[in-house]
Length: 141
Image 1 (spheres, helix red, strand yellow):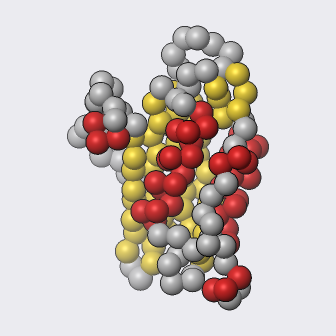
Image 2: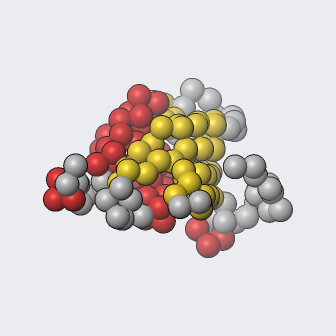
């Protein structure tokens, strides 16, 4: 694929659908997608595994729409940092979760691997740091 054929628009959050949360009690949903592909900033295919930790409020993620949402990035030119922030912003906007944590591990390029994380519980993201389960956590990747 030539650079001119790649999409410049990175996300369409209207793809994301929800179902009503069947419970008013708190619970955690964990979702893993090991097959997210996109074009890196040098127009080379890139790969990431996305881990979502989701505490629903009124809405729950409809998984088929989430799969289609991730597939839209396949022909998008985007940096790692931009990708995680776009996904985070879209999921928070559409689902309004009590808490959302995203961890992305990117395939090695030139001998380097990257791991990015965002948690709505962080003060810097507007959270209260009430869960604090991420502090001092060493995740294997």
